[in-house]
Image 1: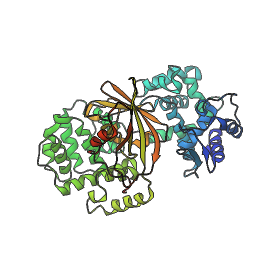
Image 2: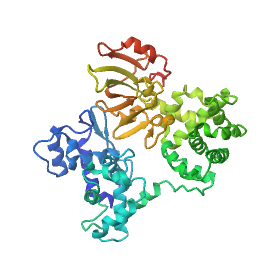
Image 3: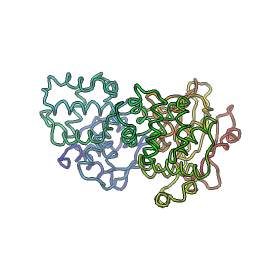
Image 4: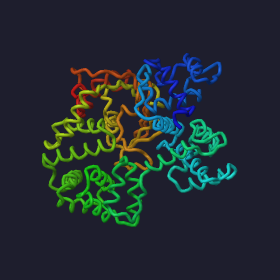
Length: 490
């Protein structure tokens, strides 16, 4: 099925054309000069004047699908083809997922996906096309993604049904008569299988932890609030911490993160948890933040690092576990008993190339223009970047590619946790940028270069600033207080 899909065929043809390397623009798309050549390979027509390949839908969608499926890897200056690592069906689904994410503008990047899934579901249940609008509206009503639909597919229409139908037909999920194909039904089944299991107030605490464990921290918090409905926070916290005592490390960390979100309101539950064997280090660390409790011993600190590293590996993969442990002092920060984890992280360290980013930080909306340059490890989180940008503990947030990131200390709302995303995942190549808001000041942060670290220099560091602003040496005195592992030391 998938191997015969025209969309996958075009994606493969594009990857074949890319081959050993094709130049890309700073935004990671093909140069306008290459568009006619690609159009010939894909068998599509383009206009005479092309400002950017991203504006040509018939080329940009296969490009996005190829990158999402792993058939091409877009680097700093060029894209190269990569051999497929999945069967055709999985390549097809990854490509479709990537296109739907790119066509969504909401913070969670789910608007286009939510609409297309509702369309497929409605048509699979048999309504006529004349009844489709009503059926799709009914399926979306009350869902968390309903409001995101209007901002999908360019945001030109409040309900872009035709755009959703076109994409699904292009990818072979619908046939020419707009009927669901076997490939479309398979996509529905796959999407259903990866959706989080529903959270309801009647779940046992142990069941809740099993459902929260695979989720990112911000999504786990949103789901957990459903379970806390009708419960006093301190009572629900006590139940979760007790269940965490008998849970796996990733489930235990999920419980800790949720309970921590209630702040000092649940301090009594943390005090009770000091009597538990497995949860005690977490409870001691949390109470230490509130200047209460006995504090943490050295072995307990190593236990915490080990558990959070295991959780990071389970949730996000070995790379995230590696960076987490590295941020906390390296492999010596782990428990002596964590031999398998230590071996896995050491193997990863031998294969990874650590880099630093040269960023230009510009204060926007002010004259004369104020700017400075910051060189910082690519692996730091946005939370660390906020500290380097002089957030000084005040409320702030980032905006990157339509997604907002903030400090959970001030409440996330619909934002994502800035401590859960690394700089390299947001600024993926030179020319990409994000915005940083602190108080009433807005900064534009642009990646200018990706560099190898200098073993003789410390990071982060300021390498220059506009005339009339704070000098680089003065800024470096403050940056020197930040404890960031040197990127030249794996």
